[in-house]
Image 1 (spheres, rainbow, N blue to C red):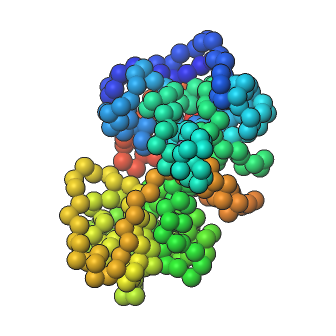
Image 2: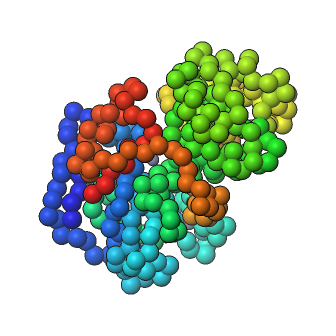
Length: 340
Ligand SMILES: [Zn+2]
Ligand SMILES: [Zn+2]
């Protein structure tokens, strides 16, 4: 097998390409996947530059994998060789004494130890070992490059929007709509029947948001977008930016509205206007990742209509260049996908 290895933290240390390694054998409830596509996520670059304190080194990055099962361990019962699957961020214990797993809320399992790209090797490789609880099935007709990025962007957006009650007749504010999860959220909110209002800092993102189905785009370089949102306010908001925008997000909501924090791009703490939360009877939730059940619902929402998010395919050997491109403002439109 071939893999792209990270031995040291920091973009100044190039990733290493390793060839002709023995292909691993799955044990227990593991699956061996042949990797068809792996997404290059901003989180990979953050992890590479020291953003994940518990990262194991050396490691193979990549938590956005789509592939095909080519072998299954003796205790793997849900998938067989030939099945197409994609990865969740991590595994789940699936034990009867785990409340989260019993309820199908596998992304909330506190016993998860197999976290791709941080605690376990990920998919910047030709092959990947994955516990079967860390993957979900991909239907025929969903291409590998789309499947690879479904969980981290569309799944995260879907779970957050559903937690906020997104549905027909609702107005959903998408804050940070130019990014990966924000762009996905426009498409998901629209398909759920809501009216999507996109908030971006840069006017160059306006056409992109409208093309994805946004009803309206608010360009707010100063983050004071609450002054431009309808006086009635939004029913719900998905905030992908965090501390810089959360105050305006809460101010944009109607009485009883719900804000979901889904991204935090800076380290500064939020000064929360608690009086506003109380007087407007707001709900503020956090959300991350998505369960296998969320992904099944999302795939049903997709049906035969592919999501529009633009993707660019690169060879696996371009992983290092892809990371540097992600650090260059404006260099990447949409998602970069590596193929072995
Ligand atoms: Zn990701
Ligand atoms: Zn569990």
